[in-house]
Image 1: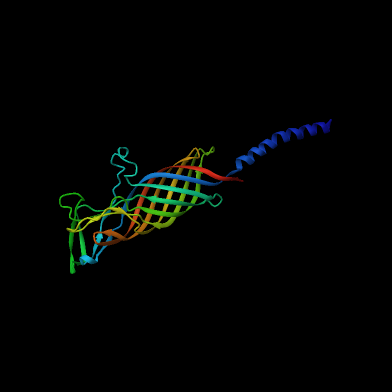
Image 2: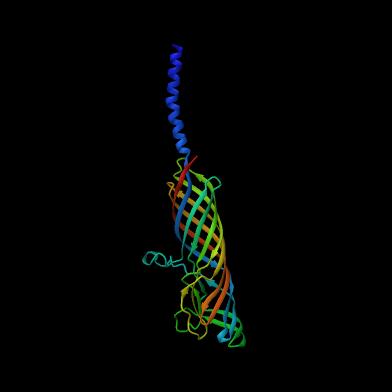
Length: 277
Protein backbone atom coordinates (compact mmCIF):
# COMPACT_ATOMS: atom_id res chain seq x y z
CA UNK A 1 0.00 0.00 0.00
CA UNK A 2 2.83 2.31 0.91
CA UNK A 3 4.63 1.51 -2.34
CA UNK A 4 1.50 2.26 -4.35
CA UNK A 5 1.11 5.62 -2.58
CA UNK A 6 4.77 6.42 -3.21
CA UNK A 7 4.44 5.56 -6.88
CA UNK A 8 1.23 7.58 -7.13
CA UNK A 9 2.89 10.56 -5.42
CA UNK A 10 5.89 10.33 -7.71
CA UNK A 11 3.65 10.24 -10.78
CA UNK A 12 1.77 13.32 -9.58
CA UNK A 13 5.03 15.18 -8.95
CA UNK A 14 6.30 14.31 -12.43
CA UNK A 15 3.05 15.39 -14.02
CA UNK A 16 3.34 18.76 -12.25
CA UNK A 17 7.10 19.36 -12.40
CA UNK A 18 7.86 18.31 -16.00
CA UNK A 19 5.45 20.80 -17.66
CA UNK A 20 6.56 23.57 -15.31
CA UNK A 21 10.21 22.80 -16.05
CA UNK A 22 9.49 22.75 -19.79
CA UNK A 23 7.73 26.14 -19.60
CA UNK A 24 10.63 27.60 -17.63
CA UNK A 25 13.05 26.30 -20.23
CA UNK A 26 10.98 27.78 -23.05
CA UNK A 27 10.64 31.16 -21.34
CA UNK A 28 14.36 31.28 -20.59
CA UNK A 29 15.15 31.04 -24.26
CA UNK A 30 15.57 34.18 -26.31
CA UNK A 31 16.74 35.08 -29.77
CA UNK A 32 20.45 35.48 -30.37
CA UNK A 33 20.23 39.01 -31.75
CA UNK A 34 18.04 42.09 -31.75
CA UNK A 35 17.39 44.42 -34.67
CA UNK A 36 16.12 47.98 -34.26
CA UNK A 37 15.22 50.97 -36.41
CA UNK A 38 14.20 54.49 -35.40
CA UNK A 39 13.29 57.81 -36.96
CA UNK A 40 13.19 61.22 -35.29
CA UNK A 41 14.14 64.88 -35.35
CA UNK A 42 16.97 66.96 -33.92
CA UNK A 43 18.28 70.38 -32.96
CA UNK A 44 21.92 71.55 -32.80
CA UNK A 45 24.30 74.13 -31.38
CA UNK A 46 27.65 74.71 -33.10
CA UNK A 47 31.03 75.98 -31.98
CA UNK A 48 32.46 79.07 -33.67
CA UNK A 49 34.69 78.12 -36.58
CA UNK A 50 36.85 79.34 -39.45
CA UNK A 51 36.08 78.82 -43.14
CA UNK A 52 39.06 78.76 -45.50
CA UNK A 53 38.38 79.79 -49.13
CA UNK A 54 40.79 78.88 -51.93
CA UNK A 55 40.15 80.20 -55.49
CA UNK A 56 43.54 80.05 -57.27
CA UNK A 57 42.31 81.27 -60.65
CA UNK A 58 40.77 84.35 -59.02
CA UNK A 59 43.79 85.09 -56.85
CA UNK A 60 41.79 84.46 -53.66
CA UNK A 61 43.04 82.66 -50.57
CA UNK A 62 41.35 83.95 -47.43
CA UNK A 63 39.65 82.88 -44.20
CA UNK A 64 36.40 83.85 -42.55
CA UNK A 65 37.38 84.05 -38.89
CA UNK A 66 35.37 82.94 -35.85
CA UNK A 67 32.02 82.68 -37.61
CA UNK A 68 28.79 81.89 -35.78
CA UNK A 69 26.51 79.24 -37.32
CA UNK A 70 23.06 77.97 -36.40
CA UNK A 71 20.72 75.16 -37.37
CA UNK A 72 17.36 75.32 -39.16
CA UNK A 73 15.09 72.85 -37.35
CA UNK A 74 12.12 72.87 -39.73
CA UNK A 75 10.09 70.47 -37.57
CA UNK A 76 8.79 73.47 -35.57
CA UNK A 77 7.38 74.99 -38.78
CA UNK A 78 4.20 73.03 -39.57
CA UNK A 79 5.88 69.61 -39.57
CA UNK A 80 3.01 67.61 -41.07
CA UNK A 81 2.41 69.98 -43.97
CA UNK A 82 5.71 69.16 -45.70
CA UNK A 83 7.78 66.10 -46.58
CA UNK A 84 9.16 64.31 -43.50
CA UNK A 85 12.71 64.59 -44.88
CA UNK A 86 12.74 68.40 -45.15
CA UNK A 87 13.18 69.19 -41.44
CA UNK A 88 16.31 68.15 -39.54
CA UNK A 89 15.74 64.41 -39.17
CA UNK A 90 17.79 61.43 -38.05
CA UNK A 91 17.58 57.66 -38.25
CA UNK A 92 19.25 54.73 -36.55
CA UNK A 93 19.61 51.20 -37.92
CA UNK A 94 21.17 48.84 -35.40
CA UNK A 95 21.79 45.25 -34.37
CA UNK A 96 22.58 43.92 -30.88
CA UNK A 97 24.82 40.97 -31.75
CA UNK A 98 25.90 39.98 -28.21
CA UNK A 99 23.00 39.79 -25.73
CA UNK A 100 25.26 38.63 -22.89
CA UNK A 101 27.55 41.66 -23.07
CA UNK A 102 24.84 43.87 -24.62
CA UNK A 103 27.04 44.98 -27.51
CA UNK A 104 25.85 46.08 -30.92
CA UNK A 105 26.58 47.90 -34.16
CA UNK A 106 24.67 50.83 -35.62
CA UNK A 107 24.40 52.93 -38.77
CA UNK A 108 23.72 56.42 -37.46
CA UNK A 109 22.66 59.30 -39.75
CA UNK A 110 21.79 62.89 -38.79
CA UNK A 111 20.40 65.33 -41.35
CA UNK A 112 21.64 68.54 -39.72
CA UNK A 113 21.81 72.05 -41.17
CA UNK A 114 24.51 74.70 -40.74
CA UNK A 115 23.95 78.31 -41.79
CA UNK A 116 26.02 81.44 -41.35
CA UNK A 117 24.18 83.68 -38.93
CA UNK A 118 21.98 86.22 -40.74
CA UNK A 119 23.17 89.84 -40.82
CA UNK A 120 26.51 88.75 -39.39
CA UNK A 121 29.67 90.77 -39.78
CA UNK A 122 32.51 88.34 -40.46
CA UNK A 123 36.21 89.08 -40.13
CA UNK A 124 38.05 88.21 -43.37
CA UNK A 125 41.84 87.78 -43.49
CA UNK A 126 44.02 86.70 -46.42
CA UNK A 127 44.44 87.48 -50.09
CA UNK A 128 41.68 88.73 -52.42
CA UNK A 129 42.42 89.49 -56.08
CA UNK A 130 46.09 88.79 -55.29
CA UNK A 131 46.11 91.61 -52.72
CA UNK A 132 46.34 91.35 -48.95
CA UNK A 133 42.99 91.87 -47.25
CA UNK A 134 42.00 92.30 -43.61
CA UNK A 135 38.46 93.56 -43.11
CA UNK A 136 34.83 92.72 -42.36
CA UNK A 137 32.09 91.38 -44.61
CA UNK A 138 28.33 91.44 -44.00
CA UNK A 139 26.44 88.22 -44.69
CA UNK A 140 22.74 88.53 -45.55
CA UNK A 141 19.87 86.09 -45.91
CA UNK A 142 20.07 84.09 -49.15
CA UNK A 143 17.60 85.46 -51.68
CA UNK A 144 17.26 88.99 -50.36
CA UNK A 145 18.12 91.94 -52.54
CA UNK A 146 21.43 92.59 -50.79
CA UNK A 147 22.50 88.96 -50.36
CA UNK A 148 25.87 89.42 -52.06
CA UNK A 149 27.41 86.75 -49.80
CA UNK A 150 26.04 83.66 -48.04
CA UNK A 151 27.30 80.26 -46.94
CA UNK A 152 24.88 77.42 -46.17
CA UNK A 153 24.95 73.71 -45.56
CA UNK A 154 21.19 74.08 -45.58
CA UNK A 155 20.26 70.79 -47.19
CA UNK A 156 22.52 69.22 -44.70
CA UNK A 157 25.79 69.18 -42.85
CA UNK A 158 24.80 65.49 -42.73
CA UNK A 159 26.72 63.31 -40.26
CA UNK A 160 27.02 59.59 -41.04
CA UNK A 161 28.56 57.39 -38.34
CA UNK A 162 29.27 53.69 -37.96
CA UNK A 163 28.87 53.15 -34.23
CA UNK A 164 29.75 50.55 -31.64
CA UNK A 165 26.84 50.31 -29.17
CA UNK A 166 26.68 49.31 -25.49
CA UNK A 167 23.34 48.81 -23.74
CA UNK A 168 22.51 48.72 -20.02
CA UNK A 169 19.17 47.43 -18.69
CA UNK A 170 18.05 49.97 -16.09
CA UNK A 171 14.57 48.96 -14.97
CA UNK A 172 11.40 47.15 -16.04
CA UNK A 173 8.02 46.21 -14.62
CA UNK A 174 7.23 42.57 -13.69
CA UNK A 175 5.59 41.72 -17.00
CA UNK A 176 8.27 43.63 -18.92
CA UNK A 177 5.66 45.58 -20.82
CA UNK A 178 7.70 48.68 -20.00
CA UNK A 179 11.51 48.60 -19.97
CA UNK A 180 14.04 51.42 -19.67
CA UNK A 181 17.56 51.03 -21.05
CA UNK A 182 20.61 53.25 -21.28
CA UNK A 183 22.78 53.33 -24.41
CA UNK A 184 26.29 54.52 -25.09
CA UNK A 185 27.40 54.90 -28.72
CA UNK A 186 30.59 56.04 -30.43
CA UNK A 187 31.85 55.94 -33.99
CA UNK A 188 33.42 57.52 -37.03
CA UNK A 189 32.26 58.09 -40.61
CA UNK A 190 31.98 60.49 -43.57
CA UNK A 191 30.09 63.74 -43.83
CA UNK A 192 27.82 64.24 -46.85
CA UNK A 193 27.18 68.00 -47.05
CA UNK A 194 24.92 69.87 -49.42
CA UNK A 195 26.87 73.00 -50.34
CA UNK A 196 25.25 76.36 -51.14
CA UNK A 197 27.33 79.55 -51.22
CA UNK A 198 28.06 82.86 -52.87
CA UNK A 199 30.88 85.28 -52.08
CA UNK A 200 31.19 88.97 -52.94
CA UNK A 201 29.89 89.61 -56.49
CA UNK A 202 30.86 86.19 -57.79
CA UNK A 203 28.32 83.77 -59.30
CA UNK A 204 26.81 81.34 -56.81
CA UNK A 205 27.97 77.73 -56.80
CA UNK A 206 25.87 74.89 -58.19
CA UNK A 207 24.14 73.57 -55.02
CA UNK A 208 24.82 69.85 -54.68
CA UNK A 209 25.55 66.93 -52.35
CA UNK A 210 29.10 65.65 -52.05
CA UNK A 211 31.38 63.54 -49.91
CA UNK A 212 33.22 66.24 -48.09
CA UNK A 213 35.27 65.05 -45.12
CA UNK A 214 34.78 63.02 -41.94
CA UNK A 215 33.34 63.19 -38.43
CA UNK A 216 33.57 61.41 -35.09
CA UNK A 217 30.81 61.34 -32.52
CA UNK A 218 29.61 59.94 -29.21
CA UNK A 219 26.12 59.91 -27.75
CA UNK A 220 24.19 58.79 -24.72
CA UNK A 221 20.55 57.76 -24.95
CA UNK A 222 17.67 56.74 -22.70
CA UNK A 223 15.23 54.34 -24.35
CA UNK A 224 11.77 53.43 -23.03
CA UNK A 225 10.39 50.28 -24.69
CA UNK A 226 6.68 49.46 -24.55
CA UNK A 227 5.27 45.94 -25.08
CA UNK A 228 8.72 44.70 -26.15
CA UNK A 229 8.69 46.19 -29.64
CA UNK A 230 7.93 49.94 -29.68
CA UNK A 231 10.28 52.46 -28.11
CA UNK A 232 10.87 56.15 -27.60
CA UNK A 233 14.49 57.31 -27.35
CA UNK A 234 15.94 60.62 -26.14
CA UNK A 235 19.56 61.28 -27.10
CA UNK A 236 22.32 63.79 -26.40
CA UNK A 237 25.27 63.77 -28.78
CA UNK A 238 28.66 65.41 -29.29
CA UNK A 239 30.16 65.45 -32.78
CA UNK A 240 33.28 66.87 -34.39
CA UNK A 241 33.26 67.29 -38.18
CA UNK A 242 35.97 68.34 -40.63
CA UNK A 243 34.82 69.42 -44.09
CA UNK A 244 37.23 69.68 -47.01
CA UNK A 245 37.05 70.09 -50.78
CA UNK A 246 33.67 71.82 -50.56
CA UNK A 247 32.83 73.10 -54.02
CA UNK A 248 32.50 76.85 -54.48
CA UNK A 249 32.79 79.08 -57.55
CA UNK A 250 36.24 78.44 -59.11
CA UNK A 251 37.58 76.82 -55.96
CA UNK A 252 37.04 74.94 -52.71
CA UNK A 253 36.35 75.62 -49.05
CA UNK A 254 37.18 73.80 -45.85
CA UNK A 255 35.83 74.10 -42.33
CA UNK A 256 35.71 72.25 -38.98
CA UNK A 257 33.32 72.63 -36.06
CA UNK A 258 31.96 70.86 -33.01
CA UNK A 259 28.27 70.14 -32.49
CA UNK A 260 26.04 69.51 -29.50
CA UNK A 261 22.87 67.77 -30.61
CA UNK A 262 19.59 66.65 -29.03
CA UNK A 263 17.25 64.10 -30.66
CA UNK A 264 13.93 62.39 -30.02
CA UNK A 265 13.29 59.16 -31.96
CA UNK A 266 10.42 56.70 -32.31
CA UNK A 267 11.49 53.16 -33.12
CA UNK A 268 10.80 49.45 -33.47
CA UNK A 269 12.87 46.65 -31.95
CA UNK A 270 12.46 42.93 -32.47
CA UNK A 271 14.50 39.74 -31.86
CA UNK A 272 16.17 37.92 -34.73
CA UNK A 273 18.34 34.83 -35.12
CA UNK A 274 18.26 31.40 -33.49
CA UNK A 275 17.03 30.83 -29.95
CA UNK A 276 19.57 30.56 -27.15
CA UNK A 277 19.33 29.75 -23.43
